[in-house]
Amino acid sequence: MAYQYDLFVIGAGSGGVRASRVAASKGYKVAVAEGSALGGTCVNIGCVPKKLFVYGSEYGHGFEEAAGYGWSHKGVEFDWSVLRDNKNKEIERLNGIYGNMLGNAGVEVISGYASFVDAHTVEVAGKTYTAERILIAVGAKPFIPEFSGSDLVVSSNEMFYLDALPNKALVVGGGYIAVEFAGILNGLGVDTALAYRGDQVLRGFDEDIRAFASEEYNKSGVDVRLNTDVESIELVDPSKPDGERLVRFKDGHTETFGLILYATGRVPNVGSLALDKAGIETGKNGAVKVDNNFTTTAPSVFALGDVTDNIQLTPVAIKEAMALIDYWFEGKEVSFDYDNIPTAVFSQPAIGTVGLSEQEAEARGLDFRVYQTDFRAMKHTLSGATTRSMMKLLVNNADEKVIGAHMVGDYAGEIIQGLGIAIKAGATKADFDSTVGVHPTSAEEFVTFSAGALKPRK
Ligand SMILES: Cc1cc2nc3c(=O)[nH]c(=O)nc-3n(C[C@H](O)[C@H](O)[C@H](O)COP(=O)(O)OP(=O)(O)OC[C@H]3O[C@@H](n4cnc5c(N)ncnc54)[C@H](O)[C@@H]3O)c2cc1C
Ligand SMILES: NC(=O)c1ccc[n+]([C@@H]2O[C@H](COP(=O)([O-])OP(=O)(O)OC[C@H]3O[C@@H](n4cnc5c(N)ncnc54)[C@H](O)[C@@H]3O)[C@@H](O)[C@H]2O)c1
Image (cartoon, rainbow, N blue to C red; front, side, top):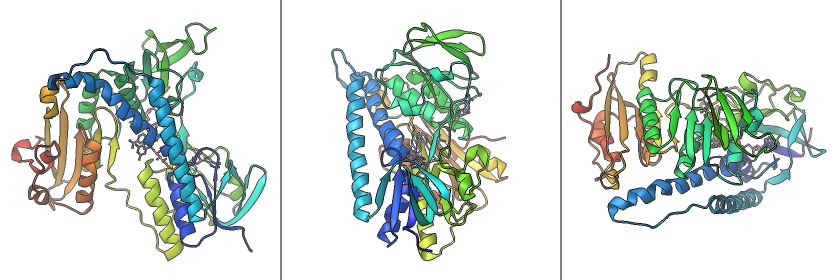
């Protein structure tokens, strides 16, 4: 049977753009449907605008810190609308680049939300399209639990377009998005509290890193409240829907905030796809089930990125797309390595991590040792800031390989990328030791760990 396209991609985000662009450049006839802006979550309401906000908010501390270096200033003002609107312009520029990239590769861009008619057919805005293969790359969307007043909170989506910043904000959650936005709001001068229902933020990260980062967030001005959960929320004045919100916490105390951000996870964006019409099965939270070749339960339909039950990171979606391309064009079975994926949390201070945490290494029954240090970074000897950095290296005793590297501190995201290469390449502690440090940097601590930095372990 002849299809209109070799490949129809649903969603022009991190994974979908890469898959459609490369498939078209290799000769497939490709269309991509996008219901919103080109580039997806990362470009429009994720990584990119978030990082611009982080940069913007870091200046907030910078003015104070510059005093120790001789700078004085008379009154500093921040105008949220300038940051927001300049960010919008930059994102529009990127949307244009994505459009050109797809166009130049010969990909047909179809505007609108797609849904399945059958395993080879989708419908977009009343028109049907047939394809030999269909790729689901629709990403994820914010999950907000339902409770009395949950309609009075915002998700990360809205944070990028706020009309004005509040005087006081509450961030609920303890993952990447919660700690990143708590840092952004705090840096921009908003009185910020972060409420997390568990014992410590950033579940899944190394325990020492979690505790250290949480303490540093507190020192930087974020009021981190652990074991704290919201019972209900109401308007202080019901005639003012945009006005102050009264939060009733589960411990009984009440408090008002101008803005409440819920960053309580993201779930696959499958609602409008009519997956059942194509025989596509879903699992946990609606994630599309795939085998190791990203093939769904319908053999002509594939899925990757945040819509599957996997690590939700842009470089992961992009690498999955490239692996799928190799599978289609070269018949290479995919064996995607989800171990040793470096990642950064762009909180203030930032976190960089790659490989195993101490707890994961223990759970795997490994015999390993841990080098650990924390110190005041050189910059802050004059800045007057009390902020400290932490670094941690895990070494497997059996083969001397470095199996985990973790950092809290300035530039942690930049530093961890190189360590990711070393660990992926199987570097040993001796390889680290024989590498000449870059001086004076914080990063050099990773190549100068001596026995004196060994962490006593039970
Ligand atoms: C606030 C925030 C900050 C983040 N920061 C980082 C970071 O710093 N680093 C990092 O690596 N990751 C970050 N992420 C995660 C990253 O954005 C995602 O992992 C990545 O975008 C997933 O790519 P994807 O291709 O699976 O989906 P997406 O990029 O989400 O793209 C999916 C696209 O599909 C479209 N779509 C949905 N349904 C349909 C339909 N039926 N028809 C047509 N189109 C449809 C959507 O409009 C969207 O454009 C962040 C996420 C958020 C929310
Ligand atoms: N820097 C980055 O690379 C970056 C930045 C942002 C997001 N991301 C990706 O996006 C994903 C989603 O981010 P996220 O922060 O929304 O999710 P997350 O899964 O990292 O964190 C969700 C948090 O919400 C809490 N939570 C869940 N349900 C709750 C409830 N009912 N009440 C109170 N708290 C609740 C969880 O315990 C957890 O702490 C991340 O896992 C990450 O993969 C990456």
